[in-house]
Length: 202
Image 1 (cartoon, helix red, strand yellow):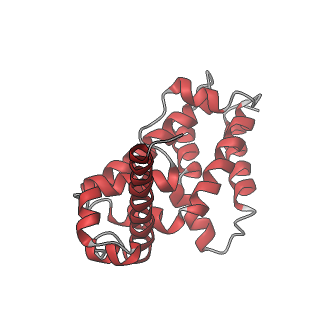
Image 2 (cartoon, rainbow, N blue to C red):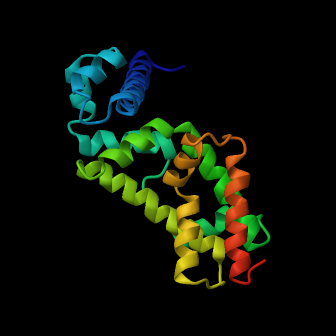
């Protein structure tokens, strides 16, 4: 039987985790709606239903809260290693199949976190903490594209196109111009297969 002291400690720890998550959720929503620079700690506190001091205690600065929001959106704290990226595509037979997995997973992530990702791209040049997390996402994507290609080499132009097609801004452009979100992955996969075929990769 759990002692009262251990029970209280466990309850307190669970409460801290729950409060932290409410703050992250509130910050993510407000940053997506207003932008990071236009969102104060007081705004986040009001949205989360906590005191401003509680927000500051959990996240003393943007350098702490921005990575937490980013992890909630695309669940990455650092770029994957090439070995980790290869494991992601272990069940995909060929280059095209690996890119199909990458595109479908990425599009799902982009649709889920669209507003926050858009705000982050818009303010990355203004806030170093945002630039850091966007750079991590971009570097991670580059590693995943390299893993999709495996030992196949492509031209510099093809390499750049593959990165552009897989990245959030391209997905956002298609979505903003009226493309069906359900159809976007197949559209992007088709473009990628065209690039691969031009490089002699089937």
